[in-house]
Length: 303
Length: 254
Image (cartoon, rainbow over all chains, first blue to last red; front, side, top):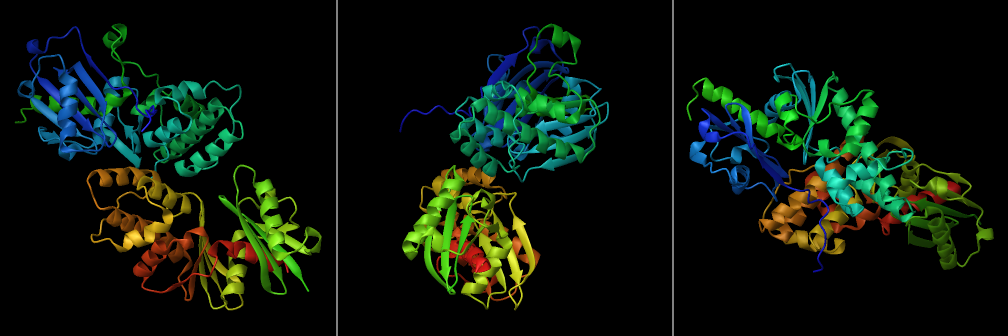
């Protein structure tokens, strides 16, 4: 079989905070978020970000949690025994055998978004691999309301993967490519990814550029997502978490439809921002999970 | 001696039918491709050729289907719902519920004794429950659509598919294949899932016997069997089910 570039393969990542020594900390807590398409792990030391890992998973299995944990702690010298409390979340949270508690991804994303983006966030839009959630939170990150779509691919990472594949472009370039149009083309007429793909194929064959086709799809996706948001009533500030938050083409169009700018993906924590710590929107769930872990272990919750 | 024609400009194929004095004398099917206007002309000319006629000899042409406005030589339009009703009445007057499952749209239409449309439901928003989904699945399973029926008969286990979306179903399928579930069992589950989608659309208009299935997907015997199994009734499928819409348009033009 010929070597084919797999355009949906977004780059995996990990990072360790160069300024922290986990051995000096009191509580090491871990959050593991196992989704349907990707998994993330986050380690906090006394509530400070120590390290994280972000990887794709083929399909959820019992190994997914351990694999992402190993990726997260790579090179740090940490082992599972050094972790005081682990919280599992995400679609595969029941499959995190070493977790001490499982907490819903809605709660974890709310908490995580609040920590990463700041207490001004009242609405969180999480665009994951196979679902899309609109969450209302208070200034402590506690969930007040939510709406979820997990039945339809429109507005999810899978939809973007289909399009990246269609135009043969690495998925991480889709957003920026879609913005290189002189004027916004009309959005694809169908919300359904399957129909949108057929429509887009026809347009490509009729001579539309990749930029234009991607622009019309990002526009349709932004529209679909805004309909979901309106069902929980959007209140500023709005923060986006999950993989598609990295797609500037969709994010900009969401801001445009809402009539205000969604929050820039950057650390609310000034020290982190100043030091240039990476801000990975996909770790929000795992961050929230690790924060819950810290709260629980401080309250004396037993392992 | 009334000669009329019907053109059904569909998402995937254009169908053309010529009727003379109440009998079909020519028909043709051509892929729509990216130029529906051209495909309509081609299908029409091919049907005329089969009927041994020229364009001038046809008294009236009506178009239907998602691309009906692109058929520039038609003298008017018929809605797809109306075309389905008139077409199935022409072929099988005892039918009271007709379900048209095409490449990208599904319709359920209830008609009364006089052949008038009583109620209808359309699914044009979601690919699950349309032909494009079946083709995607066939590709994922590396099997031909025509072979799906036979394969589904070999199923020994019942699996429930969780996904309601065609895109998610494809991913679910890939996991099932990797878990080494038998292809026959997967095909059976997929056909049942699509049948489910179609049945809920049918329930929205009420299921009144006799029930007929038309459109390209009606050629899939496995799909028909799945619906019959679930509803516990016999479904009538006219010969050349994909042409019923075009026949309906031709009947309306007569």
